[in-house]
Image (cartoon, rainbow, N blue to C red):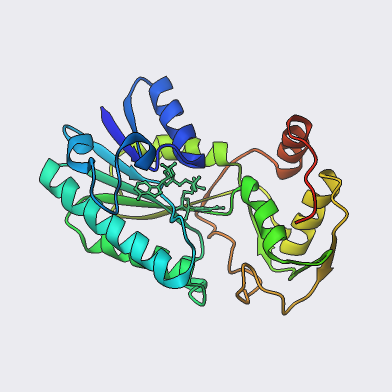
Amino acid sequence: MKIVVIGGTGLIGSKLVKKLREHGHEAVAASPNTGVNSVTGEGLADALKDASVVVDVTNSPSWEDAAVLKFFETSTRNLLANEAAAGVGHHVALSVVGTERLLKSGFFRAKLAQENLIKASSIPYTIVRATQFFEFVKSIGDFSTVGDKVRLPSALIQPMAADDVASAMVRIVTSSPVNGAVEIGGPEQFGLDELVRLDLAVRQDPREVITDPHAGYYGIEVSERALVPDESARLSEARFEDWLNQSTKQAPKSAPA
Ligand SMILES: NC(=O)c1ccc[n+]([C@@H]2O[C@H](COP(=O)([O-])OP(=O)(O)OC[C@H]3O[C@@H](n4cnc5c(N)ncnc54)[C@H](OP(=O)(O)O)[C@@H]3O)[C@@H](O)[C@H]2O)c1
């Protein structure tokens, strides 16, 4: 089965392409780095020739409100139009758990616009909503830092390893379209403040995390359960602290942002 992974050079995309190939599929990594651009349309028709499935794991180079909306709208429209022309039978896109609860953020408005375009199209689809990746926790801390203090609320988060996101996507990509959304998440819940405190401690980063109910998640106020998946979500196994200990053994210590 030929599976084209748009964004196949990114964090999730590169893991997904590798795993699909290990399962014996013809997986094509498509991105500007490989001559395929879903925003300009460059290389798209050629890449999609004879494809059964297209997976969209792109991300916008800019998260500024107007830019990120333009990216996901233009890219998704181009993908769906090219997929219709090529006779693709399954469009799979990676989105985020809680998107509809996070619409004060331009990024999440853009992800919802992406989801809505997919739902309105004629291509059979599966939207995969994942919780935050373990790899993303450091960015949450960095974004919330002023000087040597990190302010975060104790709202819950249920992160998962990027590797487990890719494994879950292999199953979904090689199954029939559900024409709806499925949720995936990690095995444990943490307070956002607690999670970043753990992350900084293991990285031996001296920044102090202050619990502040009014501090946002990436700039927006979040309710207690806005980031956690429904009970029906499929949960992965890798635990944050095991992953953190393993990955900090391999990487040099980080400096405060
Ligand atoms: N971060 C989280 O915790 C989280 C949680 C749930 C869901 N998600 C979603 O997961 C998705 C993938 O995230 P990621 O962290 O794997 O992204 P990433 O590492 O930033 O990779 C982004 C990919 O998009 C490609 N890309 C950028 N512009 C493109 C264009 N015009 N045409 C085609 N490809 C383009 C990049 O290609 P180049 O390498 O060529 O630039 C790269 O392969 C995102 O949509 C995000 O919303 C993220």
